[in-house]
Image (cartoon, rainbow, N blue to C red; front, side, top):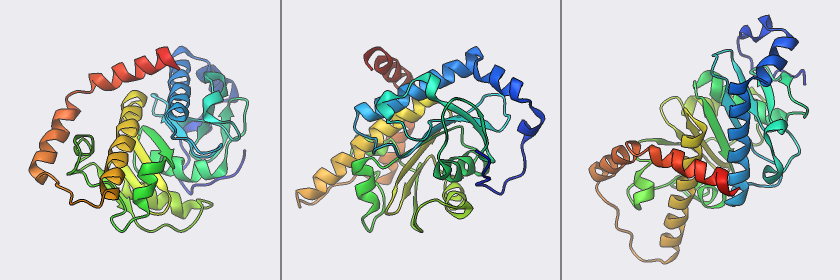
Length: 258
């Protein structure tokens, strides 16, 4: 693919040869990232977070080269294996991998990786989180359930939906909103979850949807809600951050199961 979905400065990928890209793609560290990214995609399908062959997960290479791994165009998440993951750069060039890539993925993911400096980026239209983006609140109330408190002071709402991400502006706007947040609720659209590692990002994605589900169900009763004080929500969020081993254990349990 030769399109340039982002008007970003060229990275040092231009100094790397095609042979080097292939060598890196098949290296042990990148193979491990490909396996983890494929596992996260299959797990998301298992948990009901996928939507046709749409949406994407990505992870930056550890070498700070501006390259990242991405699921390809046209495959359902439950069928994706490490061999299907594609290596790309921020200009939309496919550097290694056997499949094509979708332009909308580049407009969103390249911008978030480059402009917001995020390492792992998971974008879904998962049902309950997306349902909350359709409301006036636009996002999760992080003072309700314990799962929701995990995300206190970590979320932002992007309220300027402007159609499909077919040019630089949509991705750049989303990236700007994520400079000081881990999670963006995209109005009338879906959600983006970011983290430094795939296992952390997937754990957040899973529990975000659980928190959104609980809120949607609670609101559907019509009964008054009883939030906790913001100070308590902040305390719980910090406690959750100190329990990150659970994220890794959950991801490894998924590896044994899926």
